[in-house]
Length: 343
Image (cartoon, rainbow, N blue to C red; front, side, top):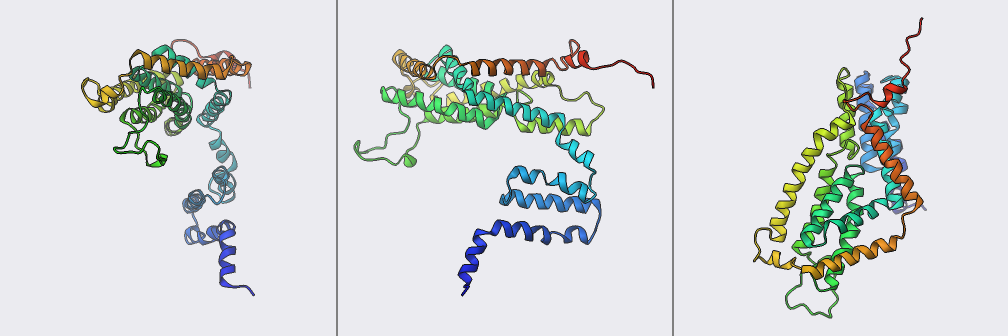
């Protein structure tokens, strides 16, 4: 005998299937009562919003719904709908993602970061400066999330090694704490220096996304909207974006770093507890440098994969930059057939 509990269990298991069937039917009055292209478009938008919020379908599948429904419901024809998915800004975004995935897959970004940090210096202040600079530069070319995820393990390893050598602490020490007692990691409070490293990395990733047009999806969304709305304009070029936004990126990042040094690490307050906590001296710098060297040694020699990805990355950047450089003809003008043919 089927009980109410059995019915509820079945609904809990198959709720997505039920929602996919019931939800579109429940929305039909949106355009059936006023059957115009605008209301039909509203129906599709609300339908996609529901599917996205509840994730009853994969996000990518939901994003493809207009490709089927817009031509079917007479909102846009197939050609216009399809071309909206293949704008140059969309393809630029996809290309940037592919390059970023290749760099992450071969771990080239980590190798470059470790070498650069060793070169900049290994005191707390210089280390923090180097980490936010690298995060900012990396975030210009890959997503902010990926840039942050790349830097966090490096920060964790360096801070843990400094603590192991007695040259700093990752978490604050509680008063009257039993050294042998087991501590719940989720209940520990990070030191102010630790917070500076982690918060600074998040800021640097967000700010770095401003510098390059492929650094953030919002940049490419702006490019697509601008070029759609202002079709007679010259468009948003890769090199012009760099020229306009790299100075802005730097002007935002380094005053932010100075403020964080003042707030978390006692910059300008040499006798404060924050400043004394990060004063590790030459010994601490040597420990940090040894940690970075060990991580580089673990990575081994530069692989062919890393070399080829590096070459392709530089080649792609040069193609982006020289597409319409402004001071010379762009490479598309040399390969485009401009010969006038008789009718």
